[in-house]
Image (cartoon, rainbow, N blue to C red; front, top):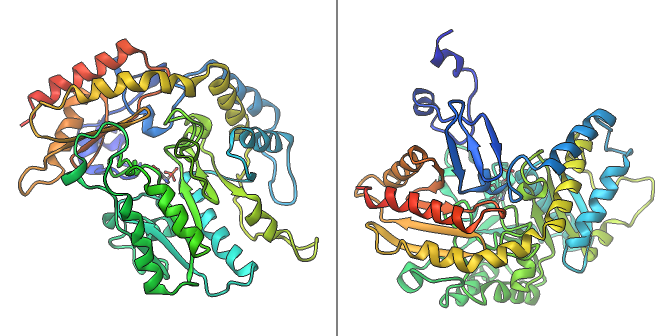
Length: 437
Ligand SMILES: Cc1ncc(COP(=O)(O)O)c(C=O)c1O
């Protein structure tokens, strides 16, 4: 079997498979803020893997917890049966959840968390007698995973192409990205609170009692770290309240300290009715997702005869013992090392370091919040995305892992990154960007 044969079987997700297999980029191990390639090159992780490894890589406490759990209880059925770690994991998660979130439903990924939350939203409306409330509203440029529910409410058209018909009864708010007024803002953009009023347009279109829920990412990560205008999320909450619509925050990337608070809901002081989670929940070590549900919604399900299943939904590996062990150890790591506070300490330095790149060629925006940064490059004429792809490849050659979405570079390093490592990252970016045509 020659080298390319060896790579042929695995159909890789969200990857240009043919190009990758001609020039593969592989990781063999990881420790701290570095990946190591099979040839021993150390690659600085500017993206926490994929917004996952908030605590950094190869953390002993988490590794040992997983090893131990695997040896004790490999699997326990989760329907009509349980195991102690699942209950402990749920309790520990709720200890850091905002007030009012009394319940958690476990899944295995962000996509499953989103589909679970959408199903809860529709079922909740039916259970409280609002049978006409079925419309699910997402927002342009938001990513909510790859399931049919997620791509239907998601606002990335390339993820929808070829897969229709999508889920009926969905609609989209306009996105909040406004470079004409907000380019190079540090922190929250000043302009655009009024974009939230777009929900009124959808209320008018569908009728006041037709919308079940609105789902948004507090910060749209996958389409390039789009930071919400100041006051936007609060306004959205108010309009939802006016029309008795549920609000769901998809915190798959903002959850677990990325903004220096446990959740974006805490950071913005805006409480949704449900929060979808994954990634940082186990610092990326074992697949796991969760939906935080407020008491009002949960309690609406807990009616009817006790022998009946209240919510006909779940996954074979919901609350898997390994995932629960990883999650408990991850939450302990965040707490014992005060890693969310670390984000608050680093973020002013991070902000000025990122914005120091402003004068380099082709940059049309730099934005940041918490330990998130994005650098938007001007697309090449007739070759949108190619400049971003070149930046990604060149950074990899310079031993730096970044993410690109179109022509935007998105950065989200592990919380254990040091000032010196931030400097290293910015130096490598600078070398790449100043030579990019
Ligand atoms: C906001 C958001 N929601 C959902 C998902 C989907 O998560 P997963 O890939 O674990 O299914 C992602 C993944 O990037 C995400 O960023």
